[in-house]
Length: 545
Image 1 (cartoon, rainbow, N blue to C red):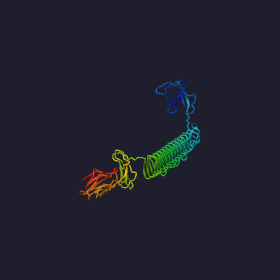
Image 2: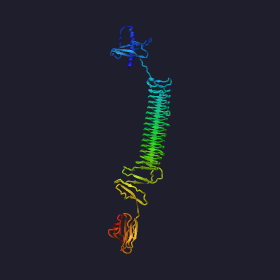
Image 3: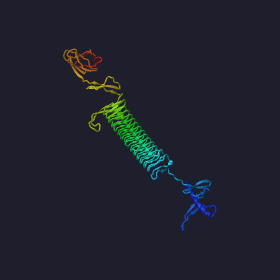
Image 4: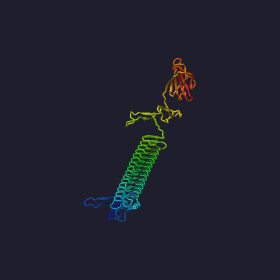
């Protein structure tokens, strides 16, 4: 605004000066008027053009003021400006237009290599390559420049770019030696000669020396090998295979394998193809391929453990193919096709095709008011959906209501044919526990004994439960004696079979404890039970039929 005003004032004053000179040639003294009209020379018979000089404002000036012009002729490319103001007296002077100076220059004429001018850098001046650009503010050596053709260093200091068509945005002490590579910044990062078309975002002491690979950020990462690999962040992560990925974490490595991924964590390592460790600490996959560890601590897949997996836990190991650790700790699987969980001390599972739950309780829970079942299916020969409509099972289920937790301990041996399970008398059962044992199931034996003389001895076996005493014949009312029973609690029913006055008598003596002597006539009965402790038959009941 001031410059435009000065130009207007200069024009008006110049016109006024010219007008004053003309007028002064005619009359000495001051020149007054509302406006000054200046016309050009024009051509005869034509209208002349004019310039009109008038004061500012539509009516009157705010105050009188005087312009004093310079006493010298104006130099080239100068303009009038206010030198000083004293009251209403304004002194004008000539001011030269400033000369613009670019902070950049072409280092070598005709090479189109651009650099900062020497006065704007610290250290050694450099010479970029053909069509290259170096805008760094400092160099500690002449080699620290964009020396390759068409390369760029946009800022920073002490950076070196010798890669064709490569670029460094900024940073300190970074180096790019591969063609078509890019680095955004950081400190002491390097893209080596083998890292064509690779990328480093930021961070420090990062090295990429494999093609088509990238590190976004972090500290002390390294990518070598065949390329196509990626590190997202973290610290001290390394890849030496090809087509591998480490998203983050610390001290993780993928060595020699392909198509493998580490998500994060610390000190995790993969050295085979197509495997994954999502996180955790000190987990290792050194066999495979196609294995995975989700997390946990000090878990290992090695040996022949291809297609294996560890979900988590601590100190678990797999060397068998297609095996899986659900979690827990201290589990080693050497068999194939095994799934295992261990909740306690170390265990090694050598079996194959098994599900192993170690040092834990198996709970079939429910919250639907319906007890869950353990189902054991019969063999199914067909492939496809399981179970087939014709495949049946045996289910074991808890009752709908229990007053206590019930725990049954199975027998310590297999048992014999024909035996059955029962709650064993020892150890004695409690309200919540019982030990099962095998017991022989005996087939009741029916014995018919002909009594032909007094004091006839009747043999009783361990299976005798029904005894017929036939008293037909003479003499009448013959007595009998019973042999001892063979098992505590053995029951036996005795029936009399006799006619007329003939009968059989059992006396309350010896090994019989009766409510009086018993004379059994036809169809009369006597029920006895053997008490092994007292070694006696005890009467339970009798009938007179």
